[in-house]
Length: 314
Image (cartoon, rainbow, N blue to C red; front, side, top):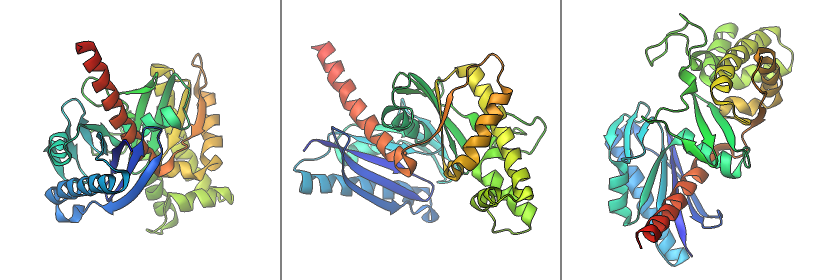
């Protein structure tokens, strides 16, 4: 059965699947990255995992994968297939596409994890059918994916969609990126966790605890939560002004709060817009499978492009 490898590499774990031409997940698996052993060990773990997935396809599906798609965090040079930098994994300038192609004997597409997740949400998830969408993941940090006609825009240098580093509070909290007042310092799951832990005096308190307290009417939690929502709305309205998306998809850990987040967020965005059109603000549909599904789409797109190119040459 013709299939591809889809591999989503996270900060601590990897999710993978063998994906059929119809999008069916024919086999799924997960492993740790082994990042505690250093960046070289992470690369070795990725290569070994991919090789095992290839072997599974040969044994159980009757043939090796036709291609592979791999989503990784950090700064990614998709054109040259290089994982340029990832703070969580400690690597720099890893020629991951070249290494995987040699290991698998098949073409490999490399993508940024959030843009790859956005691709999946745009094609088969919450933004399916939308010609213009913006996917925003609210996790440890905040990142986005700009969707146009079924593809995701990487930008001239691979930085498109980095909405987490839009400054929403000038002169505010320092950000590791070097700026002050970045959106992700106020509205990420990590930022809400930090603010709620400080408000309660409990270092173990996190964003999920804050959301539960908001739902129960705790005024302290409502204050912390609304500050995050207001910062997020400020950043999103900037994005709406620049991009004019039809659909705005919100994913990541903070989105798991459901309407505790989405009801005040829609209200906050609506209060801020003037001439801009209010988009459909909706939760992501694919959860933590988005990156893996998107990696599969990258692989099939790579094959389609190869076929198209060969037809033009012929």
